[in-house]
Image 1 (tube, one colour):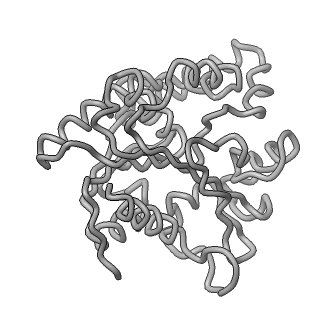
Image 2 (cartoon, rainbow, N blue to C red):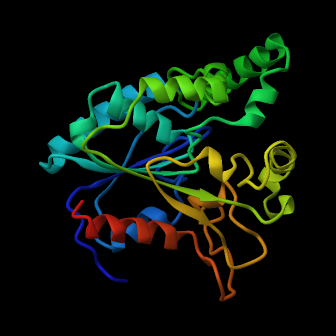
Image 3 (cartoon, rainbow, N blue to C red):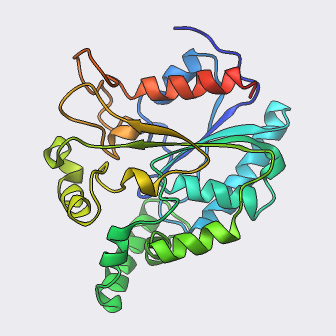
Length: 271
């Protein structure tokens, strides 16, 4: 595997519903592949279902810690799903703009979700009851300040618009984004029902989000796989721990290809 010269270490920021664990890594094979390329890898360590604001504070503290330990000026952030919003808030609202060289987001709902707009029409007491039990569960799993209902509301298009107004891009930060799509709902059993719902409401998606909802900064396009499966929201972080397809052709056969490209591009930019 080709080595790269990356100026700054990489902070990987997970999305909603999972935490950073050593034995069950959110990112599958990806960190090992990037370390083999020569990257110094760190993790956000924020709550699974914490609000954008509380998670961003954890990320900001983590950035300061990495900068001190590595004796560097900045970090590169690679963030999946909601992790991209947590990171943007840390950069814009918590003064981390001069400590972040780049933010790469994968399937982050920068512009909210039309599907979530529809789901939030469910009576509030039903939503809040379900979210209460989710918070209890995530506290058991280690979250200190889960706020599931608040997080879900932040995914509506109206709240996303407000967030984007409050959190303009940092002047010195390079922003880029990636989108992904499944080829059929049956491609991923975990995303089957959500994919059908989003398809009916908005169009092609990765099981949760459509490409137009995740564009931010320099949009690097919609990533598609070689095989019949496509790429689901879970596949984006290598949940299955194996290649997407053994076939050759147009598209990628392994999700690690996307991350290798990200790192290679950042090295070319001197970051």
